[in-house]
Every structure is written in structure tokens, then in C-alpha cells.
Length: 309
Ligand SMILES: [Zn+2]
Image (tube, rainbow, N blue to C red; front, side):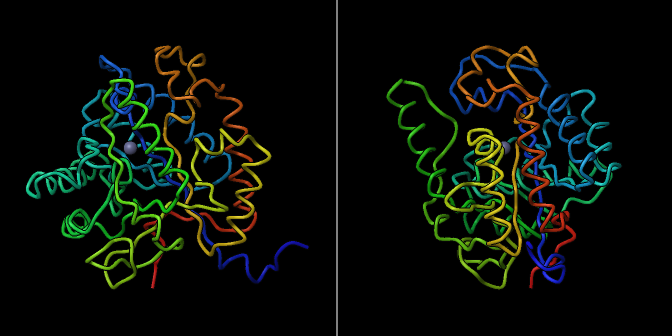
């Protein structure tokens, strides 16, 4: 049979959702114009809450504090807390260039992000996730000094790094400007399991803040867009490998992962984000199968409840 009961409780898993509003995708893809559509919060978040609720899984929702100003979002934030989920800090304004900003501006993005989310949610915020996963020692010093107890921004995945480099290169050729930045290739050498970071380099072990790196198994990042691209069978197989390989698995989704161009009558130009073309019901089925696969071998916990020695 598969796995002894003795080893099941020692494995843990966590799932995070980055609540990036649609306007972030206009910036990533260099699309002209802005949108005020709140579909990611209104539909994306509520679909994930329904999915996690059906499976009895607690999650962490990494929120952008500026989005709390949008009418209705404070209530949505509090509803997440009431449902047993954790709120994480995804910064004040979702600037992709935090690692390049002046230190006095950067610390505001990190500290005000946490403060405003805590005020709005009426709940403590323990964790930080950097926009675009770009991190360095200076940013981590801010994360620590502003009262966070963990970070979950390191993404040690070569295919993702190369794909991002490729997309950004192609956009330059097309004369478009992406607001995303590539980040450090050092992330590729980071540990694959939760670890305490070195203060000098967040990608190496030390005595500092806890890092929960985004999961990678067999070269595949454990993120929603990858599961959608793989389809149900391959996504489940990847999840199975991950949960056998690791003592802790960190899965990552974005709120838009459960939006659809047709389902939600989105701006057709957002078809540049390929997984938005996939119907919501199909993606939900894939994600549910992945989460069930992980849950069979690991206990889902909120990251704020997990201790790393
Ligand atoms: Zn984001």
C-alpha cells in the first residue's frame, strides 16, 4: 500500500493564493489602458474559498494592501479570516521593482502593506510574498524589521525563470514594456524545503527569518498556471511526486487562476494570459484533483502555524 500511517502526519503542505487584481496583468503584459474591474477579488477569491471549504483546507491569501480601498474588499478580507484562512502581505502597491527601490521607499511598501492589511482584516499578518518573487537581502531585512515572521517568495525553478526571461525578451522585441523584472538567478540554487535564511543572502541557509520556497517537483513549479497547462493527469502526477519527495510542499495559486475570459466576460485582450482562455470549471476540476492528491499524504496547514527549526 501507499505510505504508512506513521509517516503521514510528519508531512505538511500549504496553499497560498496571490490576490493580484486584473490591473496587475495589464502592467505585466504591457497592455495599454487600465481596468477597475474587481473580478479577481469578487469572483476569483470566492471560488477559491468555495474550493478550499469543500476540501476542508486552510489557506493563506497574500493580499495587496492598496486593493483594500476598493469598495467591498474589506468585507471580503474579513470573510477570509472568519473562514479560518490566513492573510499574508503581498505589499502595499505590488511594485515589481522592490529590490531596486530606494530603501526608504521600499520599507514603506513592506511595512505599510502589513499594517494596512492588519487594520482592515482585524487579524495579524505574519508572512510576506514579494511581487514577481523578486527578493534580496535588503528586502528581507525590511520584511523582518516590519514584524513578519516568515517569507514565501523564493521560487527555485529554472523553467519558470527561463520562461519569464523569454517572455520579457519577446516583449522587448515587440516594443512593449513589461513592468515585471527578472530577478536573481541565485533563486535557482535555493533549498527546496522550508529553511531559515541567511541575513546576507535569502537563497542560502542561516539563522534568520523562515523561508517557505514555492514548491517545485521534477522541474515543474507547483503553481496554478502550470497545473492548468499540464492538464489533470500530469498535474496530479506532479503533485504525487512532490508530496513523496518533500517533507513540506508549498502550492501557489493566483486569484485569477479561477477566472475565465468567457465565464467572466473579461477584456478579450487578456487572452495574452493563456490560462484565462480555459473554462473555470475545467481548472477547478484540475486544482481539486491536485489538492486531494496532496491531502492524501500531507496535512494542510496555514504557514503561520508551522514552525521551522
Ligand atoms: Zn502578485
